[in-house]
Length: 167
Image 1 (cartoon, rainbow, N blue to C red):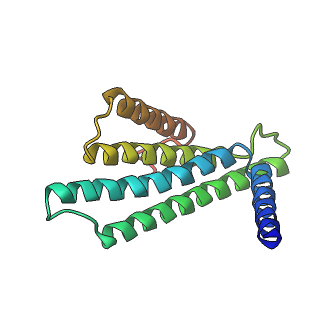
Image 2: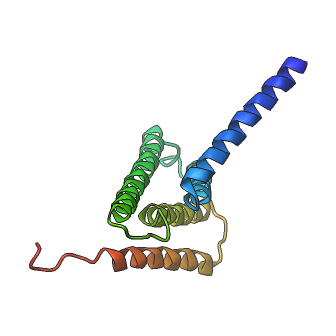
């Protein structure tokens, strides 16, 4: 019994150390990424619940391993896109430092992209819950969609669309 308790303490300590290290290195991005990972898991589970609920009403519908794998691949793509945005932040932060410019934060695009994906996951969870037959307040989806639009707008302010001359 003592070995199991010692092992559990060791695992908890390693997890705490890893969490503290990531929180230190990622800053404000860490809690957003944590929420995103939780939302991804909730979206996957809510999608399975919606599929099962639909299958009970229509035998033609239901669980699909192909859809499940595509959903997982999409979520891996989210993480890769966030990684690219964090790399852009790193490049900008380092370049600014080399030019003697002071940056107020070392992450901007990574945070925007992570928040955008988090809001996207929240919308998907609500859609899945609705497909499963749960009544939802309309304002909740509208609020999340409006927040997602606001985040997109902030990114668009920094990176304007191409002009017709650049195309």
